Image (cartoon, rainbow, N blue to C red):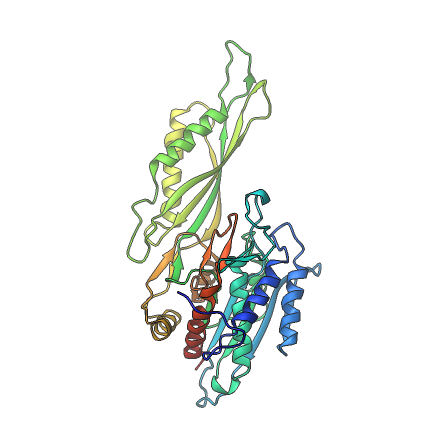
Length: 406
């Protein structure tokens, strides 16, 4: 997917240089989740919106820290009496993953350096490029309100990469509990339509042992770390959910042991260890099946370690898997627009990682969680976007939104 950069909007109205300028400005502002102050990156977007004559609202937490930024335009095209005006939300995150080791980067993570047609920097792909595109789409639709009759809303979350989604929650769980007709999430990837994602379920397992002196000869106790290690290997070998692949979900369910903590020094046999489990869910391997599978393995493990105490498990609820139908309005509009603009019929898939689309689906709100610029190295060193992908993605998005808001 490629297009030639230009100094001004092209025949299809693509303001490529302006999008790149805003993207570079955002990438140059560090906004790492849990590390940086989000006020500067929010202020940058506010200044841009104000410069374009677009109204906005900032959603804050009780202490006054920003959670999200919201802006909206409404079409003025006439509609039939009592006709419902369609409402689409464009959602992107302004917070980012951490930098990792800065020495692993070819260019500094906030340099927004451009080389060989790629713009480098943390958050460039996930998802400040989406935010920059969405800002310009809002401006475009605001300039031609007479041509559509629906509502188009920007929602920029500042708490996505923590997994808290506080900005989205402040919007969707606010006093009015809004239910738009669809949400388009600004994640990267321009060669497919991501219309769903695996869900997730998490757990903490406490593995007990019996303490003893590490130098003891006869009283050796029960080593909770060794017991936990055996349990971790058994959980991994069980391959729970691996037979849960199905049409539309290329990734099956899976279990991953993500942490093992136990022991406190050199001289004591540890009497407690904790495992962290992450389970990815599909429609064929849901939360009930995941819980039953893990709990059966724990019972078998406990039987082998009797008479030591049984393991304890704390379940942490997540979100179910979801997938929009291929004929859902969001999917159909994007597929038809891509066919018209690019001459390509994009495949429709479900993603392996869960995302805010799962949260929205759980609230009954349709969400697309993938069609955007061509990005690379998301969450890794040398994250970047392909500048040439901006123009064709813009055209497809604009055409799809015109269909949805007509």
